[in-house]
Length: 455
Image (cartoon, rainbow, N blue to C red; front, top):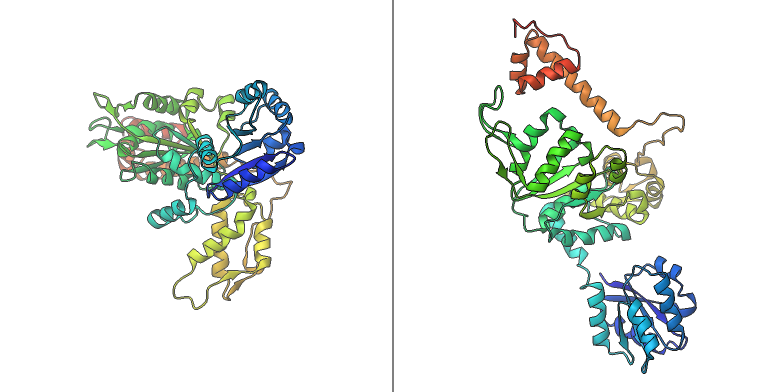
């Protein structure tokens, strides 16, 4: 994609026209002109541009670059200076601008300087997207919203690095899709991608799940078992909801990330694993650190390359695009006519808040496709959840999930104890769990057990 440039023109616009004309012939750039009178620091910071070209003639350029020195902007700036230029102007420009050229403009030199400042031309996102869809089936990586496009542009860059990646965004924004895309476009594409739901792993099973165990490590450990780190060796370990790990598990994970070595349960030696780590969360990890829910050293270890995925409600222009795309992918070859959305149905989609983001939109489109027997989907076919009453008590996702896991654990343990007459050893063996870990669950939920003699 082309770099967006803001060209600040002088009053006569003679050199500015030359800049825009020269760059318009190059596919790498797209120019927008701004009058000098409107070129204040506030306007420059808010401008939707990757870089700034200041075409300077007269004394105004000196005031402009002095103002940038007092209030700098975080955009690469190139100055076009007249000849001759005084030493005062040259000194002010050299201390503030990232580079400068002299007029008259030479298009090849201007293009070379800008590419040196802004980097090579942007990746062909359509080609990247098509490759991901064709070879991985990542159909949901669709959108034109600037925030989404910016995230998509990061995929090839991050894929070239082995540095840890932290993907943030609300539930349903596609964090695992982006993680798989980073893995696929990197050098590890032919090696495993192991996804771990950190929040679903009980604390007492963390070491066994991550590091594995050796034969004889505990009762019923009849053979060696690989942990997820060993399974991901050479490839990518994706830590979904990494904030769900307990403090103890965080310390053990941090030790592995620092040393890249681990010791399986019951083993007498350490092992080495070469994995690329991608972590994801739907929470503000900075707030988690402040609230003592996440170790700061683990946070800084994971937060090297950062990728934020915007929620669907902030991608208003992409809702209709995604809805049509999903409808097309859901179409069956045997259908006599291809379905489409009416304008009123698309308006109803645009008005929804989409708390479940892209995942929720896909489900809504799928339901509408099934509900509609005609060629055009109308608002009556679009089933959207009603907004929650302001008086209704909010249900915290993590609390609800924890309650569901606890209910399952209690029911599972209780049924096995009933089946084996309260014998913890036999119940643990059937559950393929360590007897001590199973016993802790029995104690945790206050369940009746057999007398020591029966165990």
